[in-house]
Image (cartoon, rainbow, N blue to C red; front, side, top):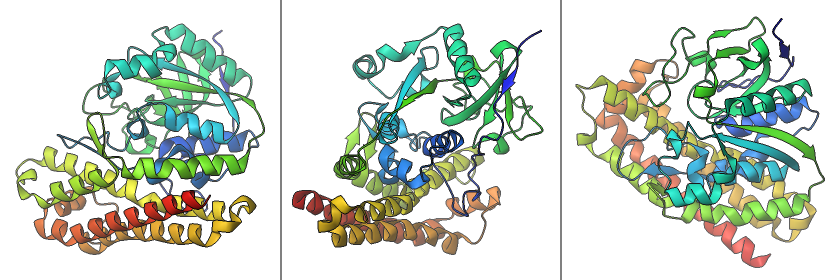
Length: 385
């Protein structure tokens, strides 16, 4: 009889406000938070969002409307740096494997970068992936997977069946995909789950060809919170002021390109619904990245309240307030477009509407200015420290 093992009561992850009434928009810190909470190691989402850099990122492909702009791997020369930073910030060792047959989201990185930072993690051995997942689940530790359900973003593997041929877990995308609709990796569609279990977990089969990577959590060690905070502060100006990374514009340059694209009516073919849907998605992802400054503000307020930063507390609180102002500008979209949160067609139509876009552009520009202002405050704080 084939073996099955499921870890019950792992906290759910979702884009809906199920977490103390707050939205969580970036899958990796949300999934890491849920796994750690299950293990009795409680960290708030904004701590993980801040330490992985997701709270301060902004990326835009130099040439196309790229749906992957929002992916954390495009925040650093080392594609793994955001993931490593968050794990270091919680004092966890880890074992990472990258499926070398699934490098589609690495196509934007030069081969030299992939060899420098990723070569040691590459494997095409499905049995190795499976054995590591099974060992972790058998030990009661959920695994973080990428790309198993939906795009190559994080999910939680909470169990396995059929000796590991089937996986169970949580994905922030599972409720947005038709379980009967299974699409090959590399296509324009995302991998839907094979089904949903009674406890809410997704069920996925043929999972290896859909998986880009896995992170298996290891031992826990003590952390120096002040050192974590200092390291995170030092990274903020790099994230917000660098101009480009390989095929992407970053930071302020990404804001400028976002404004340019939204201003250009020729970018929006009203006769091409597929193209408009793509542009709507990229536009919404850009708003999401900017809106995550809200978590960044909470993160910086935590730093301000740490005794090691008492000498710059006032400056940190001012920086936090300014990042909050950056985030709040994104709420203006719903004033311009209307309260159309659950109406996909209305959202596409609003994105295509020149009047709506051009009414929103001043808010993007203000967010860009506030983002720079907050960054310069962080730089002055680092000088004082």
